[in-house]
Structures are given as structure tokens and as C-alpha cells.
Image (cartoon, rainbow, N blue to C red; front, side, top):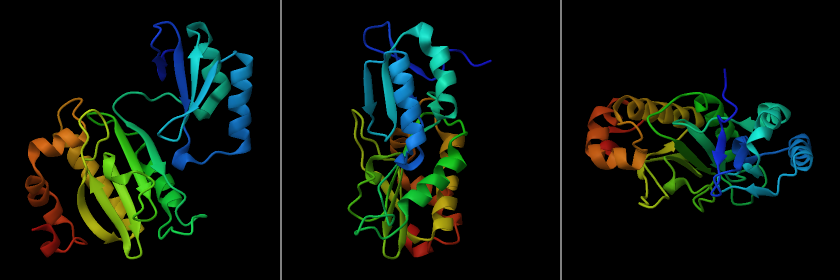
Length: 229
């Protein structure tokens, strides 16, 4: 049975909580907005905040209201706060942006669907950008994908926290299918070898990029060997 606190984040006052709604690729619709607005009015929630991960946070919730709020939000509520995929941040890509060279929204939805239910050693954040302007902040996410006119660049081990790190470029010029496959391989490798609570940035610093190349990248057929060594 799911605890009424699962997915709720205790706030600085030690009394109230925040709940986020899951918005794959940062895309929302009128029904989602109306549901959030209705919940905020019904329970007198004082703050609604769009987060850096393109989610909507409802902040200042009383503990006794949590079960009803989760029920009212239904499938929109993000109840996963543990070592899993927290969000997939995406720019507009080719949907509307004149600079977009790859469909970042479409790929973000595929990534979200493929990995949102998997448990990892630590939380994961992903950023997907449709062009090298990198509005999806791809270089500072655990997994980053950046589009160019030749395909996708995959980046691993980025972090924007108190010990920021620019991720390592793993491969370039990949198709959608190749990019998804490489992300899966990278995450499986990380899941099987990382220490508990070890984010990808600290993981790759510990094992070294050469180890990743020799143990994983040399086995992937669509990455040319001369690009690995």
C-alpha cells in the first residue's frame, strides 16, 4: 500500500509539504492545468511553482490533505521521489522552434516512457535539446541528448549541483533508435556498477571514462572504434 507521504516533500517549516505533477517533456494540456488549479483552490494551496525540471509543484500542503490531493490529481501526481528518473527536461525542438534540428519532444516522451519505472542507485535527471543551443541543459544532466543536423549526441555524467560537472560526450550523429539504445546501455551499466546514492557524475569520476570505453563502448556496433579509442 502506498504511504500518504510517498511523493510528498517536507518543506523548510517542517510542517507543510510539496507535491509535483509529472509533465513528460514539459508538455501540458488544458485538462492538466484545470485539474491543478482546481486542487489548488480546493485545498487553499498558497504556492504553485514551475520547477527547473518543467514540472508544476504545489507547495504549502497540510499533511492531512495529502491523501485527498493525490486522489484528486490522479495520474498527474508524481509520487516517485526515490532513486529513479525524476524528470526529462526538453526544449521545443522541431515542434515550433526555428533552430530545432531534431525532435526533442518526441524523443523525450520515448525516454520518459522507457525509463520512468526503473529503480537506479540514485536519482536521475535527463535533458534533451533539439539543437546545439542546448536549451534542455543536456551537458549538466545525468543523461543528455543534443540534436544536430547529423543526428543525436549522447552525453553522460553531467551534474548541476554543488559539485557541477560537464558530462562526457559518448557518441555523436546517432539516429533516434541508436540514441535510445545507447541510453539504455549506459543506464544498465551504471545501475549494475554504481554505489548506492552515487549519481552518474561521481560514478564516472570514480571509474574513469577509459573504463567505460573499454567495458561498454567498444561493444556497441554503431559507435566507430576509432571514435572510442
